Image 1 (tube, rainbow, N blue to C red):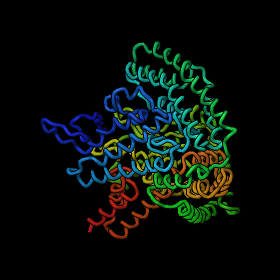
Image 2 (image 1 turned 45 degrees about the vertical axis):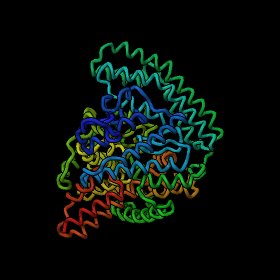
Image 3 (image 1 turned 135 degrees about the vertical axis):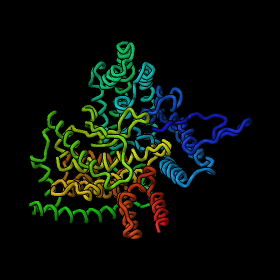
Image 4 (image 1 turned 90 degrees about the horizontal axis):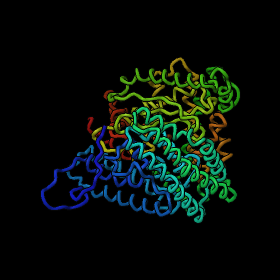
Length: 605
């Protein structure tokens, strides 16, 4: 794993100094020497990536982000300065490969900053420390969500110092929420209030947090388990201190936030799109660029979505007829399939355990085939885990978390199992290939090269990352993993249809006046998916505008580049080499990915 160099000294890249000439820093060192500036703005992300305090910066693991209006302004200023610092790097000794990496990092940083240049509300460096968020809180994002998820699942407790840092963050939680409430009111004064259903969902999530006895809260359970595993001295005393901090800071802050949202709810609109917000059309266009690496308009993406929906519908129709489902629309027939008991896992502990076991079987199958399709292979296994029950309802379904920088925490495929009816067995192969291998896990592990700085992982391309995940689903079919299994192949096509539908409904809600209900109805009618899945997905697009566009836009670009390589190389085309070229420097922005592939092709003649 990479060693991260964070301290800025007089002999660093940005400051001139006299005396003996310092030893030139490597490319990775120069980039990573700026990371403490970033982590000071977003301390939680150091924990997310498993960066030690020694490497993240002194005191970082004991502090939390400042979500107040003043904190947001300071973060925007600091982020702009960080981009300038990237521009000031001495590039004279950088190789072509390093220049590609640097250009990728800079492009993603600039794109992530564009929404903050358009509007004064919202949060820059919000979700995952890179996504811009239009609302201070929602059911999926905000400090109330991030704190619990990171402290429970990502924050390492290896010794008494780590345990004290955990306590320090618990003590700081109330102040962070007070800043968040100030930000909610600040944005409200600018005419920015989340839709009513988003506020209701958020209130429900906060109520669940408040439902636990303090000594049985998942945060306390997590801390206790981590201390036990690490044999931390005086763990009982530390646990009692944590419970006291929960009573004195966590619960009062959570209750206060819930009260503020209850007061805000009557003022909220039911309108789903951000087009109702000040400069909402400009904000959405900037978010399209942020999440797709393109300058497509909402109307162009909507049209691409409708075209893709029509194509996939024809493929699904033919396959449905092949397996005996002949009458009704594709969506209607997929609903029949969805309700067939033979494909539904019981919503019990035993059923959920069997679902996880079946995912692991699919993972083992694809792993055997990887050497035929990739020259470079992941050197780390991936964990498959259920999202903790108390987080599952607020989760976005299934997702992948990168391994920690110290290698102690594996890359993990998380799957939310609050209702197994929304996860029929024929959907699992495709979901597995997207999140593990050859999807996000393989992509992430290959991108964690010692030759690349951590910033190349933090500031990744949403379109390239999620585009590769969707491409991996298609690749599963090309690898023969659906042979003699047409129902699972229908699940693959339904998943592709889901990404095409995203292009239609995301742009529909945020640019074309679609309601939440219209988006849900269109999703269900077109995909034939479960009402709970359709609802949670649509409500995700409401609070993460533009993010869901990256999947299909990115996949289409990868397929375009593969076809270009086939045409130019003819018999010399090697799918393993092509895949390695796509993945070897991480999730590059689509324009840089295209330039890189074109440059590679130019050397092959």
